[in-house]
Length: 314
Image 1 (cartoon, rainbow, N blue to C red):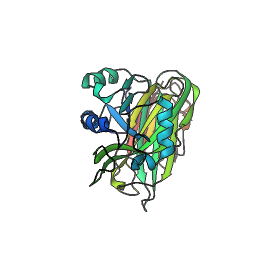
Image 2 (image 1 turned 30 degrees about the horizontal axis):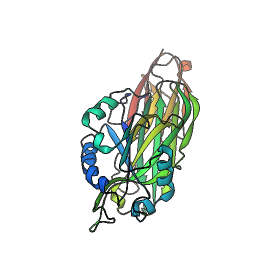
Image 3 (image 1 turned 90 degrees about the vertical axis):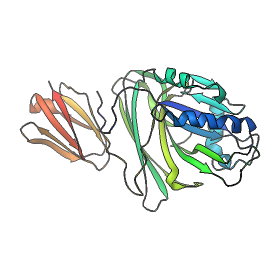
Image 4 (image 1 turned 60 degrees about the vertical axis):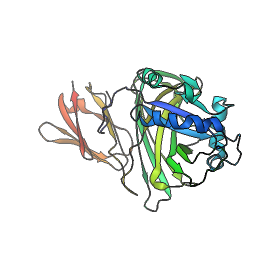
């Protein structure tokens, strides 16, 4: 079992990825987007949303022009040829936002996920870059072209005057950047259970209206079948240059010998037995593997930053 040191339980509950395609010149988009935005807002623990702006019917859509390459790549990937259009979890739902309902959200979210996923983000002190840290672990065997995607989104953009002919002035969950690129980060073609991954991506921000409304989401997807195995949202940072939470994981637990510790880079890690004797001290710079069996069976306390986890050695 993978233990994430966050104030949420690390279980295989699914968070849905909702990808929406829209445009400031699309009249039906202005009609359907408010209801869809309300549905997203009413399901903060079930849905991670990202919206791509296409190049039609208005080629002057500013949110399309801010990142034409990523918007075009995602539009082409799903073969979207009309808007508004919504895709949920890659291949589980594809259609008009008018067809969405709370029942559909509940039904799809109830499907257990084979991946655990967490992320956080922070800004540099000057407010020029955003760094996103993603870590996760497989719960089942995944076969195919498995990729990790990170989306930087602007949660809300308001215009005093409509930027397009459909009259919309408020836009939500607008895609600003896909990291590391619209093609994603390859995780491999065969991921056995308990495969851990840990990545950090940085983007030099541009075309952002309000830095304080930036957020990040991530998802793991089979690039061939388009199935999204899991998505997640970042916790909002408390300020520039500050990290949002402690990143650490320990698995397997219980263990017959070797334990793997994944800690955020620079985070102090110590392992002590129940007598208080430390058998390991170091700094997280990636996965750390320790053979605890050589220190004897029993319970060990693994401290990572401000968090402590106990692991049983049999």
